[in-house]
Length: 435
Ligand SMILES: C[S@@+](CC[C@H](N)C(=O)[O-])C[C@H]1O[C@@H](n2cnc3c(N)ncnc32)[C@H](O)[C@@H]1O
Image (cartoon, rainbow, N blue to C red; front, side, top):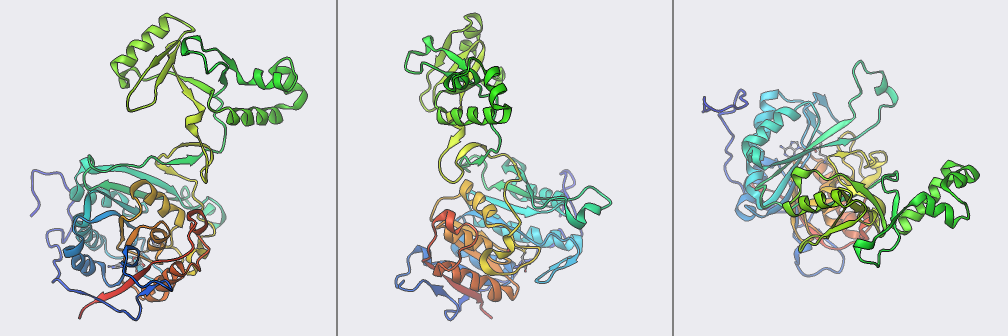
């Protein structure tokens, strides 16, 4: 019964959760699959593809997987009212809420104490879903909502009578906010941050002797010009700026910017040094820290180094910390991913990869109870995470199964295959509910 003293979302049927009888999962070994040459049943082989309604399947998994899953990602039907090719995307609002609630309660049980749930949704049911999630996980365990840009305002959508809807949302909840650890993630930054406009020219001297010069002047001199102004005039603004950026990236260890610290957010020791640096203009002060890198202050400002914003590798070049606005993942071209056609449902492999990168390590269990075309399993497999996928539709056999077989065989060149250096291996077991 609803508690009259509590603020909560109510709907018809909320007080009657479905409690199915426990059923067992039976392996269909004719459809289970492992890479050629694999004979042992090591971890990578114990992935599970389950062809069943997810309520019954999750219930069946409880015995073995309670408190075992590190990351749940789900992308349920958004309830937009459309009849899509592979599944129905319109059920009565209250029914949708009950369906989601019953499944989320089970998913919550399966999560590890340090695990997290990621739910992808659009704005049709997003707000209601968030309140349901608050009730199941507790508001204090809400991590963040990410906005994902899935398309652009081009084509026929541009003639809409409202602003064009190009977004989806990912609600993130930890099972226990204090125990969940975010693995810091960086994304490529397209433009140069011109606040980094100064170079420390004598880094090997003690910080009290440090001297700084404007980047533009240094570059102009190395090119044989007297000043930035002369160099810009001779070369043109854009070519000269490009030289400055190249120079800055090459010397990122010594290129700096100044930033005004938020006094209320820094330690007492840092506050004292900020005050001293204000009084003793031009001199650099250093705060040594055990667990973190040292902090430097000058003229009341903190000195930030460009080196902390530069990475090698795939997200190489200039990077910045990931925010909750994800507009950098391409959705065009995902129709090809995995070699299966799944219109209006499939998600980019890169999107799932980002979620797994920030929340899991190799070997962790990942669960997707609304598998669709099998993106989560394909990405988990290529990233060497263990996975469970549940899908009720026949596309479990026509889409997900062949997609994952290709991944195991190393015959799927699409999505994140190259980025992960995936060449095949492992396997999975195929299950159905016992009668
Ligand atoms: C939006 S799609 C997921 C797409 C997926 N993220 C991908 O990248 O391909 C939602 C899927 O949930 C499945 N589904 C809906 N209700 C289900 C249920 N009760 N049990 C299992 N699967 C269900 C649908 O058949 C559909 O394939």
